[in-house]
Amino acid sequence: MHEHDVIIAGGGPVGLALALELARAGAAVLVLEARPDRHAVPAGPLGARSVNVASGRLLHGLGVLDAIRSRALWWFDPDAVAPPATGRTVTEGFIGHFSGLGLKTANLDPATLGDPGFGGGAVAMADIVAALDDAARAAGAEIRMGVAVTGFSEGTFGIEAHTGIGAFRARWLVACDGGRSLLRKAAGIGFPGTDAEFVGRIAFVDLAPGAAPPVGDWIETPHGTWLHAPAGRFHIVEYGGPPIDRATPVSLDEIAGSLARVAGLPLRVERLHFAQRYTDAARQADAYRKGRLLLAGDAAHIHSPAGGQGLNQGFGDAAALGRLLPPVLRGAAPPESLDAYDAERRPVGAAILDWTRAQSALGRPDPNSRALRRVVADLLDSKPATSYVLRRIGGDWGDAGTTGG
Image (tube, rainbow, N blue to C red):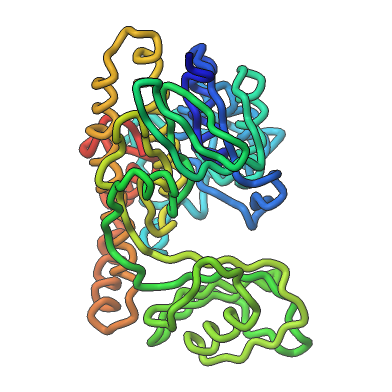
């Protein structure tokens, strides 16, 4: 006898979206999240994540779009004729970028973009997670915090998730446990791809009096690019820097060292409020399904955050599994029908990885890449190119798979 139909290892936005979808379909769902609480989930502008058109449709179907959109840092509503009471409608100015090359509003041709759905925007991760958590619990999903899944075993009984407080049995186990997925490793599923070329670092600091460099746009140097924005925000993209330990928190010394190497400037600060790092490592699982284990989100694919594709690709995974799993659970489809998940989502993942790799290549500081960047900037200054990039940003990967990214 199974305790649950589906166990989801990882209670981030992808795991919660899938839990909500399955619970609404009548499945008995258990979410096991390693973190004891949600305090560490990034909030406010520091936690901003892109929600594209495809994800907007998914969230609307799950009944949580209004709750998420109401908390948006900004939101483009294609049907709005006046700013809504909450959020901010964007009709001009920044509309997107490719490798930091901004798209121009003058080149925007809505007729070529297809159905804009419910729009899209930027929402803090904490607000996305809170809305999905509330809705999943209300739909009947069980969510346990502070319970890390460390492994699994599979047999005629189904599949068991191993934790520090015992084993939990289900018919299916979905790994939403991040890019360093323990379950993917335990299953022996390969994770090939390309190593990082750059390390990006973002920090908010209080600068010492008289120590602030000018606030302005991105500055190119022989070692990367950097930006000093208002409110003491620094963003540094460094190519060819020293090795880093991704498991350690970002320190003030690390930020100062990167700025010195890239910008040739000292960083004199009185206080570090927040710092994070990211890379452009791009990897994809050899398979999204092995037996009764399924991979979704970062457990299945990682890549640079350029273009805001990461969370949206994970939501696409959740949408596909939310459609394919219920018929299997009801006995209306055989387990083998879940092979369609891999066939559907891996091509989309591969296309998005290449999309982000191309942006990394355009950011390289060598003379050849800088020359190519100038050519691409000219090509992007057109309506067809703007429409092409915006369709990709919006989640239109129809030529790579059947579910939006």
